[in-house]
Picture 1 (cartoon, rainbow, N blue to C red):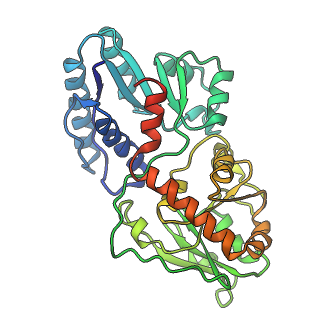
Picture 2: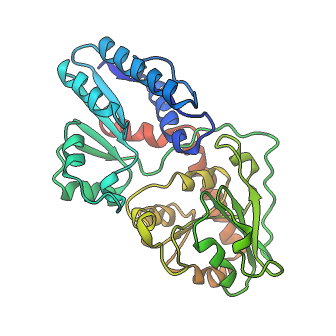
Picture 3: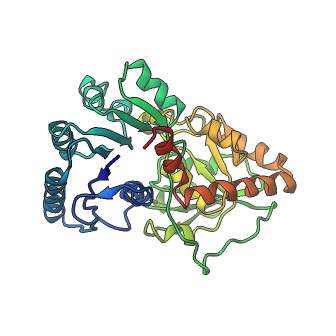
Length: 340
């Protein structure tokens, strides 16, 4: 089988949004897939970056040999349809790695067009059982496999600090865009925990009581540096406005997608606290790498009940999953499940 993919330009080597796709290209190469486009680049200028991607895709289609298997990553904006056209023209099979499904993001509504586009693939790698079931309800035609968790390629740095847990003050980390619920965390009943925040959008003026806040903003770091900067005990996967549920479009999407944030936490060697309706909640519990809650108001009791032995076991389980994530094993297994 002639297995190929087409590398593209990404806005930055340090952009969290593009890291999952960049990592997928590397993992494909490690599994014997060949890049038939230009080399992967990281140029921030949108016009120049788009031109590079145009040339890369066009070169890839010209180089594409009849009967090959072409791996695409979705969404690929204006280029996905172009690649499909080239693949079908040369009678190639198409494997698509699905990163985002616009139809599941609420604000876009259900799109028959999106399903029709993805139906042109021969095989799809989707996030998890929940997303797979949704696709099956839409009568999707391609063969499906789950990635289970998105890999996060990284080499541990010796300067990374991992402070042993202090059960008297457990550090719960939230990394990413600061949603409205962040400032409500101060309203939780006090316990043996605090919140360390990493990312963009933090507004100290929204803190209700600066003298007694449990929020500690640590700053914002590039995607390839943040793993070595985060030093915490548990990673929080939560979105929206409320402490009681992950509401809004982002919260609803959490019921289907694999947040890259979860993989980031695991590489930081932290067990996970996750909304119980999130698609990844079962993965967290089955792997023994954290616990799920229906409301953030449950955190105080859940953390207070954990014994040092239970926390040590969670962290040991985290290290096992981390080893697979940082070496690309999850995508590799999905490829093998589809005989790719």
